[in-house]
Amino acid sequence: MLNVALGQAQKVWRSGKRAARSIMRAPLEQRAKSLRDEAIRRGGGRIVMPEETCSAQFDANTLAASPGTLDMLGEMAAVWSKDALRTQDEKKFPFNLLRSEDLIEHRALIDIAVHDDIIAAITGYMGQVPRLYNLTVWWTPPNDTVERSQLYHYDHRDSKQAKVFINLNNVTKDSGPLHYIPADDCLKVNAKVGYSQGRYSDEDVYSAVPESCVVATTGAPGKGFIVDTARCLHYGSRGNKHDRLILMASYARVNSVSPGPGCRVLDPIRKRLADEFYHADPVKSLVLNTPR
Ligand SMILES: O=C(O)CCC(=O)C(=O)O
Image 1: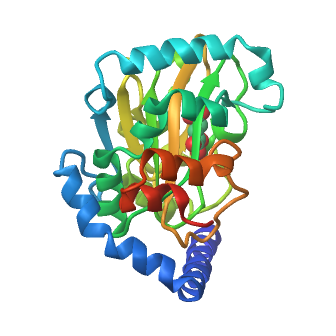
Image 2 (image 1 turned 60 degrees about the horizontal axis):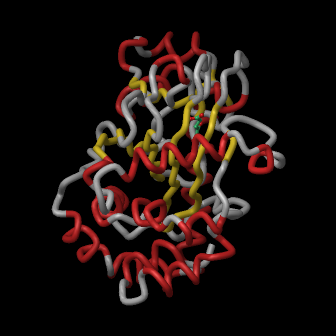
């Protein structure tokens, strides 16, 4: 009972913090809201994130500029995973293989992250055009650890956020797929065990909801998921017998509660990407180049 009350108090404190940030940086949010209708119109309702589940599935092969793009990106990521220089500074799973220059050389990576259909789905869900906080190509090698993000948790950039996960190789149950619990079921976990920004044991989670409600993000290259990881409990990279390669893009409102330390891949080239690739596009420029 105490944990449930503490969890509720934590949420109230965070909404106060967000309200303060929204007031102090009101113009950013006004701009993000003023572009909402335009961003939603462009998506044509092809991907929708319902409030009940706070998640959606899609086929990124239909978003790419040409057929075979996702397979090509997957082959490239597999080569990167063999390059020790790309992982030398990475300390924990999943390893981020991406570098800033890759986005200039392989425009498809950023084109997918700011694709009209994805931005429309997230804008509809958040009520304003989001900022892209992070972009990674994640590689998880075979492992048998169960720690950190391999345990159930919520993310806490904001009370609402969205992460896009796109498979770049064939992700099976043996390649440590992200597993998530749709938001309506997570409310049952919060009510029984309490909302927490720490880790949950499987036992605690499954004492509140059956394991059958868990969604495993398996699928062929191009299979995509959008998940509000602040509202959907999740874990990944657990029990890999095979490599997993995915593209992960993380979005939240411009005035998020915890903007975080920044993105080493995007931050050095945000302005360049916005100017060179999306010069006349106010929506994509906002997604990429709004100050943290
Ligand atoms: O897919 C994974 O390995 C973990 C992802 C995760 O926990 C997250 O994005 O917050």
